[in-house]
Length: 325
Image (tube, rainbow, N blue to C red; front, top):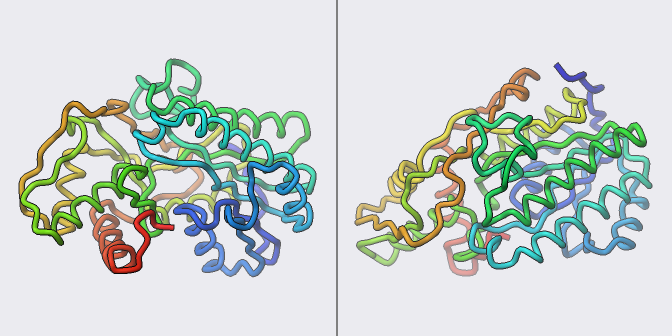
């Protein structure tokens, strides 16, 4: 098993890049709940991480002991497919600038959060970390995946060349409070929640869902992911990336049924098979993570219900922002 790291000092400065996003905001909440007293977030409105000089100046002025990189340009299938140049370039710049700044600030521990989309489209199931770079990627998000793969290689390179105790983790599909519920730029679960909630409010008798419903996906609640991040920083020190997931998946059709039930939708569900399905199945092998002593606590049905409540209370009311930010 990979070597453990010294316990994190709760008085040390921890910098969370992407602190206004789904994952970053959950990490900040978790750090504060666990008694960390010097948690600093970076939002895009604070610092443009695609700007190398601005990133370097900001990070070196703070000199954090720990950096958690949850910053990224993200979107669903449609956005990734339509804007591959932006997804590639922006994410490469964010990672490169933040890593260079962390190195200049002599950051001891850094956690880079990638994505399960780094793995080949037709990977063995469940997907082990060793599947990386063994086959072609899913075409609809290959630019984003390449950027994240570059981040994994960068972490390994800083470890090898400079002895940095940096690590990278690959989460499965993440959901929960603070997600992006934009009608065209969100991932599958928040998009479904918004669509079904609006159908119930408008009294619509039918909801159209993209694809065939047959692909299988795994989902982790963002609060579980945040807990896993802190656990790994204290218990994992290895150049190989580590998967973060729950070890179980379900079909998109079953997911749709969960969302329909949580929102109270009782009408007809129609499938638009002309829309892309994406990767047929994406279930992560989480044995490496479980071997460190961590396990998820929030079941999918419970998590979907609580996320629907959060969306209804927070974003669906007048004045709420549909993108969740």
